[in-house]
Length: 381
Ligand code: SF4
Image 1 (spheres, protein in one colour):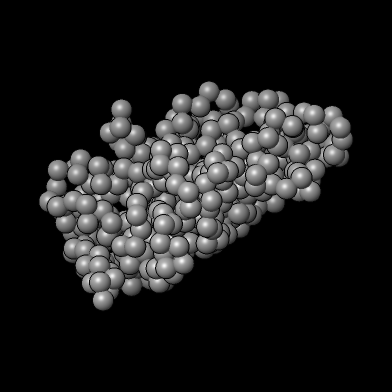
Image 2 (tube, helix red, strand yellow):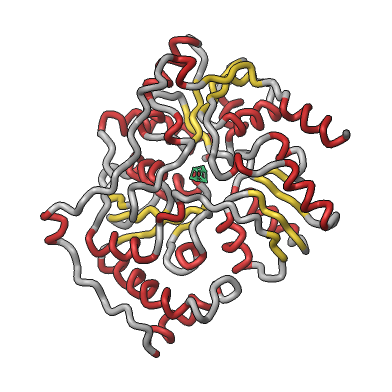
Protein backbone atom coordinates (compact mmCIF):
# COMPACT_ATOMS: atom_id res chain seq x y z
CA UNK A 1 0.00 0.00 0.00
CA UNK A 2 2.76 2.39 0.98
CA UNK A 3 4.62 1.76 -2.28
CA UNK A 4 1.47 2.31 -4.29
CA UNK A 5 0.84 5.66 -2.66
CA UNK A 6 4.42 6.77 -3.42
CA UNK A 7 3.94 5.72 -7.02
CA UNK A 8 0.69 7.60 -7.29
CA UNK A 9 2.27 10.70 -5.80
CA UNK A 10 5.21 10.58 -8.24
CA UNK A 11 3.00 9.72 -11.23
CA UNK A 12 0.78 12.72 -10.56
CA UNK A 13 3.70 15.16 -10.70
CA UNK A 14 2.23 18.34 -12.15
CA UNK A 15 3.18 18.52 -15.78
CA UNK A 16 0.35 20.54 -17.28
CA UNK A 17 0.26 18.99 -20.75
CA UNK A 18 1.68 16.06 -22.70
CA UNK A 19 1.88 16.28 -26.49
CA UNK A 20 2.64 13.81 -29.28
CA UNK A 21 2.85 14.28 -33.09
CA UNK A 22 -0.79 13.20 -33.55
CA UNK A 23 -1.90 16.09 -31.28
CA UNK A 24 -0.25 18.50 -33.72
CA UNK A 25 -1.33 16.78 -36.93
CA UNK A 26 2.24 15.77 -37.90
CA UNK A 27 2.08 12.06 -37.12
CA UNK A 28 2.88 10.95 -40.65
CA UNK A 29 5.86 13.22 -41.16
CA UNK A 30 8.46 11.26 -39.15
CA UNK A 31 12.04 11.26 -40.46
CA UNK A 32 13.23 8.02 -42.08
CA UNK A 33 15.70 5.84 -40.18
CA UNK A 34 19.29 6.77 -40.99
CA UNK A 35 21.00 4.69 -43.65
CA UNK A 36 24.70 3.86 -43.56
CA UNK A 37 26.26 5.47 -46.65
CA UNK A 38 28.67 3.76 -49.03
CA UNK A 39 32.20 5.17 -49.10
CA UNK A 40 32.43 7.47 -52.09
CA UNK A 41 35.49 7.18 -54.38
CA UNK A 42 37.37 10.31 -53.14
CA UNK A 43 37.08 9.06 -49.54
CA UNK A 44 38.26 5.63 -50.62
CA UNK A 45 41.39 7.17 -52.14
CA UNK A 46 42.32 8.71 -48.79
CA UNK A 47 41.88 5.40 -46.99
CA UNK A 48 44.96 4.11 -45.18
CA UNK A 49 45.89 0.41 -45.36
CA UNK A 50 44.61 -1.80 -42.55
CA UNK A 51 47.42 -2.40 -40.03
CA UNK A 52 48.30 -5.86 -38.75
CA UNK A 53 45.74 -7.05 -36.23
CA UNK A 54 47.74 -9.98 -34.92
CA UNK A 55 48.15 -10.69 -31.23
CA UNK A 56 51.93 -10.63 -30.76
CA UNK A 57 54.25 -10.25 -27.74
CA UNK A 58 54.83 -6.64 -28.86
CA UNK A 59 51.07 -5.93 -28.86
CA UNK A 60 50.78 -7.56 -25.45
CA UNK A 61 53.62 -5.39 -24.03
CA UNK A 62 52.33 -2.25 -25.71
CA UNK A 63 48.78 -2.62 -24.34
CA UNK A 64 49.56 -4.10 -20.89
CA UNK A 65 48.92 -0.76 -19.12
CA UNK A 66 45.50 -0.55 -20.82
CA UNK A 67 44.55 -4.10 -19.93
CA UNK A 68 45.34 -3.24 -16.30
CA UNK A 69 42.44 -0.76 -16.46
CA UNK A 70 39.87 -3.28 -17.68
CA UNK A 71 41.09 -6.61 -16.28
CA UNK A 72 38.12 -6.82 -13.87
CA UNK A 73 35.58 -6.63 -16.71
CA UNK A 74 37.37 -8.10 -19.76
CA UNK A 75 38.67 -11.66 -19.52
CA UNK A 76 42.23 -12.68 -20.56
CA UNK A 77 40.59 -14.75 -23.31
CA UNK A 78 38.83 -11.74 -24.84
CA UNK A 79 41.74 -9.31 -24.59
CA UNK A 80 43.95 -10.80 -27.40
CA UNK A 81 41.05 -10.11 -29.81
CA UNK A 82 40.73 -6.50 -28.67
CA UNK A 83 44.34 -5.46 -27.99
CA UNK A 84 45.55 -5.33 -31.64
CA UNK A 85 42.57 -3.09 -32.49
CA UNK A 86 43.21 -0.90 -29.44
CA UNK A 87 46.88 -0.48 -30.39
CA UNK A 88 46.05 0.28 -34.03
CA UNK A 89 43.39 2.84 -33.08
CA UNK A 90 45.67 4.64 -30.63
CA UNK A 91 48.43 4.88 -33.26
CA UNK A 92 46.03 6.05 -35.96
CA UNK A 93 44.64 8.79 -33.73
CA UNK A 94 48.08 10.42 -33.73
CA UNK A 95 48.49 9.98 -37.48
CA UNK A 96 45.04 11.47 -38.19
CA UNK A 97 45.31 14.28 -35.58
CA UNK A 98 42.12 12.90 -34.02
CA UNK A 99 40.59 12.67 -30.56
CA UNK A 100 37.99 10.15 -29.47
CA UNK A 101 35.04 11.36 -27.40
CA UNK A 102 33.18 8.51 -25.70
CA UNK A 103 29.91 8.55 -23.81
CA UNK A 104 29.55 6.79 -20.44
CA UNK A 105 27.44 4.10 -22.18
CA UNK A 106 30.27 2.90 -24.42
CA UNK A 107 31.77 -0.51 -23.66
CA UNK A 108 34.88 -0.71 -21.41
CA UNK A 109 37.42 -1.43 -24.18
CA UNK A 110 36.32 1.82 -25.87
CA UNK A 111 35.71 3.86 -22.72
CA UNK A 112 38.94 2.91 -20.89
CA UNK A 113 41.33 1.98 -23.71
CA UNK A 114 40.89 4.27 -26.75
CA UNK A 115 38.86 7.30 -25.59
CA UNK A 116 40.63 10.61 -24.90
CA UNK A 117 37.61 12.28 -23.32
CA UNK A 118 34.74 10.50 -21.59
CA UNK A 119 31.60 11.73 -19.91
CA UNK A 120 27.88 12.39 -20.12
CA UNK A 121 26.30 14.51 -22.85
CA UNK A 122 27.04 17.78 -21.01
CA UNK A 123 30.68 16.93 -20.37
CA UNK A 124 31.14 15.82 -23.98
CA UNK A 125 29.45 18.96 -25.32
CA UNK A 126 31.72 21.17 -23.20
CA UNK A 127 34.86 19.24 -24.11
CA UNK A 128 33.87 19.19 -27.79
CA UNK A 129 33.95 23.00 -27.71
CA UNK A 130 37.57 22.91 -26.43
CA UNK A 131 39.06 20.23 -28.65
CA UNK A 132 42.31 21.24 -30.40
CA UNK A 133 42.68 18.26 -32.80
CA UNK A 134 41.42 18.61 -36.37
CA UNK A 135 39.24 15.48 -36.24
CA UNK A 136 36.75 14.27 -33.63
CA UNK A 137 35.63 10.65 -33.59
CA UNK A 138 32.37 10.50 -31.64
CA UNK A 139 31.79 7.20 -29.88
CA UNK A 140 28.19 7.70 -28.97
CA UNK A 141 25.01 8.28 -30.92
CA UNK A 142 24.28 10.54 -33.87
CA UNK A 143 22.85 13.53 -31.97
CA UNK A 144 26.09 13.68 -29.94
CA UNK A 145 28.19 13.76 -33.12
CA UNK A 146 25.91 16.49 -34.48
CA UNK A 147 26.42 18.50 -31.28
CA UNK A 148 30.19 18.20 -31.70
CA UNK A 149 29.88 19.39 -35.31
CA UNK A 150 27.62 22.28 -34.28
CA UNK A 151 30.27 23.40 -31.78
CA UNK A 152 33.20 22.73 -34.14
CA UNK A 153 32.00 23.67 -37.64
CA UNK A 154 35.56 23.85 -38.99
CA UNK A 155 36.57 20.37 -37.75
CA UNK A 156 35.96 16.95 -39.26
CA UNK A 157 33.52 15.04 -37.04
CA UNK A 158 33.24 11.30 -37.63
CA UNK A 159 30.85 8.73 -36.24
CA UNK A 160 31.83 5.06 -36.69
CA UNK A 161 28.22 4.13 -37.54
CA UNK A 162 25.73 6.82 -38.48
CA UNK A 163 22.81 4.45 -37.81
CA UNK A 164 23.47 4.94 -34.08
CA UNK A 165 20.25 6.84 -33.42
CA UNK A 166 18.19 7.46 -30.28
CA UNK A 167 14.49 6.89 -29.55
CA UNK A 168 14.30 10.34 -27.94
CA UNK A 169 15.96 12.19 -30.82
CA UNK A 170 13.72 10.47 -33.37
CA UNK A 171 10.52 11.27 -31.46
CA UNK A 172 10.41 14.94 -32.49
CA UNK A 173 11.25 17.20 -35.44
CA UNK A 174 11.85 20.90 -35.87
CA UNK A 175 8.38 21.13 -37.47
CA UNK A 176 6.84 19.71 -34.27
CA UNK A 177 8.57 22.43 -32.24
CA UNK A 178 7.25 25.16 -34.53
CA UNK A 179 3.70 23.79 -34.10
CA UNK A 180 4.14 23.67 -30.32
CA UNK A 181 5.24 27.30 -30.39
CA UNK A 182 2.10 28.20 -32.37
CA UNK A 183 -0.03 26.41 -29.80
CA UNK A 184 1.72 28.07 -26.84
CA UNK A 185 2.83 31.51 -28.05
CA UNK A 186 5.47 33.13 -25.88
CA UNK A 187 6.21 30.00 -23.83
CA UNK A 188 9.97 29.28 -23.91
CA UNK A 189 11.16 25.90 -25.15
CA UNK A 190 13.90 23.78 -23.56
CA UNK A 191 15.26 20.80 -25.50
CA UNK A 192 17.15 17.95 -23.96
CA UNK A 193 20.41 17.51 -25.93
CA UNK A 194 19.03 14.16 -27.10
CA UNK A 195 17.53 15.90 -30.12
CA UNK A 196 18.53 16.51 -33.73
CA UNK A 197 20.23 19.73 -34.88
CA UNK A 198 16.94 20.60 -36.58
CA UNK A 199 15.16 20.61 -33.19
CA UNK A 200 17.98 22.40 -31.37
CA UNK A 201 17.72 25.16 -33.99
CA UNK A 202 14.07 25.80 -33.05
CA UNK A 203 14.37 26.00 -29.25
CA UNK A 204 15.50 28.66 -26.78
CA UNK A 205 18.07 26.59 -24.90
CA UNK A 206 19.29 23.01 -24.52
CA UNK A 207 19.79 21.03 -21.33
CA UNK A 208 21.10 17.65 -20.22
CA UNK A 209 19.90 15.48 -17.37
CA UNK A 210 22.71 17.03 -15.26
CA UNK A 211 21.41 20.58 -15.53
CA UNK A 212 17.74 20.30 -16.61
CA UNK A 213 16.23 21.94 -13.48
CA UNK A 214 18.83 24.74 -13.50
CA UNK A 215 18.18 25.43 -17.19
CA UNK A 216 14.37 25.50 -16.79
CA UNK A 217 14.62 27.91 -13.84
CA UNK A 218 17.18 30.11 -15.63
CA UNK A 219 14.47 31.23 -18.07
CA UNK A 220 12.50 33.04 -15.34
CA UNK A 221 9.19 31.99 -16.96
CA UNK A 222 6.15 30.60 -15.11
CA UNK A 223 5.64 27.89 -17.79
CA UNK A 224 8.17 26.11 -19.99
CA UNK A 225 7.83 23.58 -22.82
CA UNK A 226 10.28 20.78 -22.04
CA UNK A 227 11.04 18.17 -24.70
CA UNK A 228 11.27 15.42 -25.77
CA UNK A 229 11.55 13.11 -22.70
CA UNK A 230 8.25 12.89 -20.82
CA UNK A 231 9.90 11.18 -17.83
CA UNK A 232 12.71 13.69 -17.47
CA UNK A 233 10.01 16.37 -17.81
CA UNK A 234 8.08 14.84 -14.90
CA UNK A 235 11.26 14.63 -12.86
CA UNK A 236 12.02 18.30 -13.54
CA UNK A 237 8.43 19.25 -12.69
CA UNK A 238 8.84 17.50 -9.32
CA UNK A 239 11.88 19.68 -8.53
CA UNK A 240 10.64 23.14 -9.53
CA UNK A 241 7.63 25.41 -9.25
CA UNK A 242 7.84 26.17 -12.99
CA UNK A 243 4.89 24.59 -14.84
CA UNK A 244 6.00 22.08 -17.46
CA UNK A 245 4.40 21.20 -20.81
CA UNK A 246 5.97 17.93 -21.96
CA UNK A 247 6.47 15.91 -25.15
CA UNK A 248 5.61 12.22 -25.33
CA UNK A 249 9.11 10.91 -26.07
CA UNK A 250 10.93 8.28 -24.03
CA UNK A 251 14.26 6.52 -23.89
CA UNK A 252 13.68 2.94 -25.01
CA UNK A 253 16.32 1.71 -22.52
CA UNK A 254 15.21 3.52 -19.37
CA UNK A 255 11.45 3.15 -19.90
CA UNK A 256 11.87 -0.64 -19.70
CA UNK A 257 12.71 -0.55 -15.97
CA UNK A 258 9.81 -1.02 -13.56
CA UNK A 259 9.15 -0.27 -9.91
CA UNK A 260 8.41 -3.99 -9.35
CA UNK A 261 11.89 -4.87 -10.56
CA UNK A 262 13.47 -2.47 -8.06
CA UNK A 263 11.30 -3.73 -5.21
CA UNK A 264 12.43 -7.28 -6.03
CA UNK A 265 16.10 -6.23 -5.73
CA UNK A 266 15.41 -4.67 -2.35
CA UNK A 267 13.44 -7.65 -1.07
CA UNK A 268 16.31 -9.94 -2.07
CA UNK A 269 18.81 -7.72 -0.22
CA UNK A 270 17.46 -4.87 1.97
CA UNK A 271 20.98 -3.39 2.28
CA UNK A 272 21.42 -2.91 -1.50
CA UNK A 273 21.70 0.67 -2.77
CA UNK A 274 19.74 1.59 -5.89
CA UNK A 275 20.48 4.60 -8.08
CA UNK A 276 18.49 5.57 -11.16
CA UNK A 277 18.60 7.87 -14.16
CA UNK A 278 15.81 10.49 -14.47
CA UNK A 279 14.82 9.13 -17.90
CA UNK A 280 13.15 6.28 -15.95
CA UNK A 281 9.38 6.27 -15.27
CA UNK A 282 8.22 7.83 -11.97
CA UNK A 283 7.44 4.50 -10.22
CA UNK A 284 11.10 3.53 -10.76
CA UNK A 285 12.44 6.82 -9.40
CA UNK A 286 10.15 6.49 -6.37
CA UNK A 287 12.01 3.30 -5.41
CA UNK A 288 15.55 4.62 -5.92
CA UNK A 289 17.89 5.87 -3.17
CA UNK A 290 19.32 8.47 -5.54
CA UNK A 291 18.33 9.91 -8.92
CA UNK A 292 20.84 11.64 -11.16
CA UNK A 293 22.45 11.98 -14.56
CA UNK A 294 25.17 9.50 -15.51
CA UNK A 295 27.84 11.98 -14.30
CA UNK A 296 26.00 12.47 -10.98
CA UNK A 297 25.55 8.71 -10.58
CA UNK A 298 29.26 8.12 -11.10
CA UNK A 299 30.13 10.81 -8.55
CA UNK A 300 27.64 9.33 -6.07
CA UNK A 301 29.28 5.88 -6.37
CA UNK A 302 32.83 7.27 -6.09
CA UNK A 303 31.89 9.33 -3.01
CA UNK A 304 29.82 6.67 -1.20
CA UNK A 305 31.54 3.50 -2.26
CA UNK A 306 28.50 1.29 -1.53
CA UNK A 307 29.05 -2.41 -0.86
CA UNK A 308 26.28 -3.61 -3.25
CA UNK A 309 24.73 -1.45 -5.90
CA UNK A 310 22.06 -1.60 -8.57
CA UNK A 311 22.50 0.98 -11.33
CA UNK A 312 19.26 1.65 -13.15
CA UNK A 313 20.65 2.88 -16.42
CA UNK A 314 22.36 1.53 -19.53
CA UNK A 315 24.35 -1.58 -18.65
CA UNK A 316 27.83 -0.60 -19.89
CA UNK A 317 28.09 2.22 -17.39
CA UNK A 318 28.14 -0.31 -14.55
CA UNK A 319 30.93 -2.22 -16.37
CA UNK A 320 32.94 0.98 -16.74
CA UNK A 321 32.58 1.76 -13.04
CA UNK A 322 33.28 -1.85 -12.03
CA UNK A 323 36.58 -1.62 -13.93
CA UNK A 324 37.50 1.36 -11.76
CA UNK A 325 35.96 0.21 -8.46
CA UNK A 326 36.14 -3.59 -8.39
CA UNK A 327 35.25 -3.76 -4.68
CA UNK A 328 31.74 -2.34 -5.36
CA UNK A 329 29.54 -5.32 -6.11
CA UNK A 330 27.29 -4.41 -9.02
CA UNK A 331 23.95 -6.12 -9.45
CA UNK A 332 23.48 -5.47 -13.17
CA UNK A 333 20.06 -5.47 -14.79
CA UNK A 334 21.50 -5.48 -18.29
CA UNK A 335 19.46 -3.09 -20.41
CA UNK A 336 21.67 -2.26 -23.37
CA UNK A 337 21.13 0.62 -25.77
CA UNK A 338 21.17 -0.95 -29.25
CA UNK A 339 22.24 2.38 -30.77
CA UNK A 340 25.24 2.89 -28.48
CA UNK A 341 26.24 -0.72 -29.13
CA UNK A 342 26.59 -0.07 -32.87
CA UNK A 343 29.93 1.56 -32.01
CA UNK A 344 32.66 -1.09 -31.84
CA UNK A 345 36.47 -1.23 -32.01
CA UNK A 346 36.49 -2.51 -35.65
CA UNK A 347 34.17 0.32 -36.71
CA UNK A 348 36.30 2.94 -34.90
CA UNK A 349 39.37 1.60 -36.71
CA UNK A 350 37.53 1.69 -40.03
CA UNK A 351 36.40 5.23 -39.29
CA UNK A 352 39.98 6.42 -38.69
CA UNK A 353 41.35 4.54 -41.72
CA UNK A 354 38.78 5.87 -44.17
CA UNK A 355 37.80 9.12 -42.37
CA UNK A 356 34.14 8.17 -42.44
CA UNK A 357 31.29 8.56 -41.68
CA UNK A 358 31.57 12.32 -41.68
CA UNK A 359 28.80 14.18 -39.88
CA UNK A 360 27.52 17.31 -41.59
CA UNK A 361 24.97 19.87 -40.44
CA UNK A 362 23.48 22.54 -42.69
CA UNK A 363 25.41 25.74 -41.70
CA UNK A 364 22.24 27.82 -41.25
CA UNK A 365 20.69 25.18 -38.95
CA UNK A 366 24.01 24.70 -37.15
CA UNK A 367 24.29 28.44 -36.41
CA UNK A 368 20.83 28.50 -34.77
CA UNK A 369 21.40 25.21 -32.95
CA UNK A 370 24.77 26.48 -31.66
CA UNK A 371 23.01 29.38 -29.94
CA UNK A 372 20.86 26.92 -27.95
CA UNK A 373 23.77 24.68 -26.99
CA UNK A 374 26.12 27.56 -26.13
CA UNK A 375 23.45 29.24 -24.05
CA UNK A 376 23.37 26.06 -21.94
CA UNK A 377 27.17 25.79 -21.72
CA UNK A 378 27.50 29.45 -20.76
CA UNK A 379 25.04 29.00 -17.90
CA UNK A 380 27.62 26.79 -16.28
CA UNK A 381 30.62 29.10 -16.74
S1 SF4 B 1 20.22 5.13 -23.89
FE1 SF4 B 1 18.23 5.99 -24.48
S2 SF4 B 1 18.58 8.20 -24.55
FE2 SF4 B 1 20.60 7.20 -24.60
S3 SF4 B 1 21.04 6.99 -26.80
FE3 SF4 B 1 20.07 5.05 -26.14
S4 SF4 B 1 17.90 5.38 -26.63
FE4 SF4 B 1 18.85 7.40 -26.64
